[in-house]
Amino acid sequence: ACALSWIDTKLLSEVKMEKDLLPVGREISGIVLEVGRKVSFFQPDDEVVGILPLDSEESGLCEVVQVHEHYLVRKPEKVCWVEAAGTVRDGVRAYTALHYLSQVSPGKSVLVMDGASPFGTITIQLAQHRGAKVISTAYSLEDKQFLERLRPAVARVIDVSNGKIDVAESCLEETGGLGVDIVVDAGVKLYSAEDESTSKSQLLPHKHDIITLLSVGGHWITTERNLQLDPPDSHSLFLKGATVSFLNDEIWNLSNIQQGKYLYILLMKLSSSVFRPQLDEPIPLYEAKVSMEIVQKNQARKRQVIQF
Image 1 (cartoon, one colour):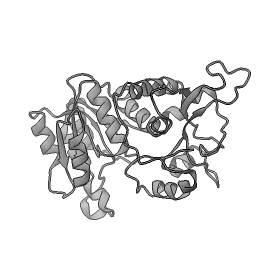
Image 2 (cartoon, rainbow, N blue to C red):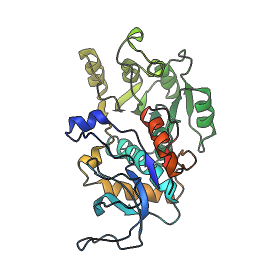
Image 3 (cartoon, rainbow, N blue to C red):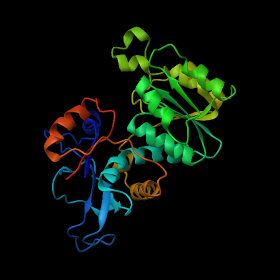
């Protein structure tokens, strides 16, 4: 199987990897056909899963892919091909956010923005597995209902779809005024309302809201690459002793020393049913082009996986 993910052309140009034609589909699961002489981790017929590197010349949608052993781990028997490929990217992101950037632990409170997204769903489940209390925002009634059905239950679902609910106020109320220990955002509003164009950005929290709802010593993990903090913002963060960390999807691909460890932990969690990913029905190969166009326009609410 091969999962489809949005291609960050801006990042590729910044790290000098932009090409006229970009291969599509980097999260793969499959069977080892042959190994090179110096390969030590795998043998033919091993079932594996992994993420192709950022500079890969090959598409995961090929029948056969040549890949370095460091980008792969063994697939646990209990995990099907589609779930393995469909979970690996969001899972590594969630692990990076909750363990590498913020050290989630029992009793901590975690706010996951847009918890019904594929990434949000796995982040919620991993945080709960570590004993954290989770609050989440929902962008639609459908998302709210999905989040309320999750088990174990989320402490509070904040429906921001009508724009009338104050996220900071709700979080402070839920935490008895202490604030949230870890915030994992899904983007933030950088400017005042009239400067924001799309309806989705209208639903995003303002950076001031996030700083307000952070606890003393809190961690704000942001996916907003152009985040601009003014001196008053920095002063508020300083007074709280809080940290801001940037969650870059490709960090393990740019420096892959830890990637194998994260992939392995993640797949063991999947095989022991710690979490269940939010996947669409498997897609046949002949529909891959249409599916990728939907993914690249950010219109897919569930992870799209091609099954061979």
